[in-house]
Amino acid sequence: MIVDGLGAVGIRVARELAGTPGLGPVILRSAHEQRHQLAVEALGDRVRPWRKSDEQLGGTVILAREAEAHPDLVRRHVEAGRNVVSCADDPEVVRELIELDDLARASGSVLVVGAACSPGLSCLLARHAANSLDSLISINIAMVGAGGPSCIQRRQDAAHNLAPVWRDGAWDTPQPGTKLAWFPDPVGAVDVGHGSLVEPLLLRRGFPEAKLLTASTAVGGLGASRLLDRVRPWRRATAEPVGAIRVEVVGEIDGEEAMVVYAVVDRLAVAAAALAAVVALDVDRLPAGVFAVGEQRDPLPWLVELARRGIKAATFEPSI
Image 1 (cartoon, rainbow, N blue to C red):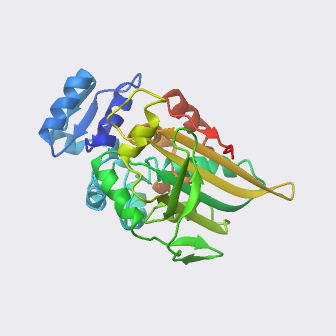
Image 2 (spheres, rainbow, N blue to C red):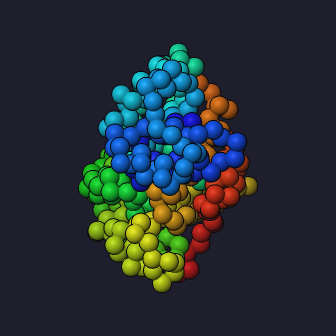
């Protein structure tokens, strides 16, 4: 198993994999030598740096570098016959990765896109909720918070730009504006608005019958420091931002409209790393080509493994 990129998510992916029984030393790639050293100091002989001779290795790569680096690196890994689990969360980058389906199939490789928290865990929860309904009408995802520094910048950019949403059989540019979204305590009510998010693009692959697919992110500067201030009374203070995702799925049961809402509150880099690791450990079971997390027809085994690793989702009903 190879982890390519040792930022906030990548180092945690390495930790998740290094703690998995029966898995050999995790190979680490990074442009930052200091991060290699820190990882080895923290994880010991359960990890080792990438060597030039490893170019001949197959296996699976978890790609956790900055999003713009993913297309070229994915091509390189796939052409070498490796499976790739990408944590990229930029819509244009993910769209480019989806176009590598033919390359992945020709190489017999699996390319999993959007394997983080948002997107990733959000899409897996959407699948779990949809499976409880007889038919599907809409999926609406809201999120607040970010992982490491690069993720914080990406989320700030996402809040100031718009990506298309799926509405009544066509892609549609949403109108700017905000609404109040309720997350579990200690996050509570947060203003969210449509942003440059990946979920509608990926959910469209897994839920072609849905009439509405949207994603929103926090606006108004609700960043790491404010979240930490709200969380400290509830849990030990931490230097890492705490965030939340909310997945609202509407459909029908026995001919009546029904809604299922799942939510997660956690450190988003930790949740993203756990999801990427769980997917990577099961990637050999997936078909060759591009695969989005929401296309996993039976999400329960992945959700159970995530819960075992400390990432737990719950049905959410706001008390208002």
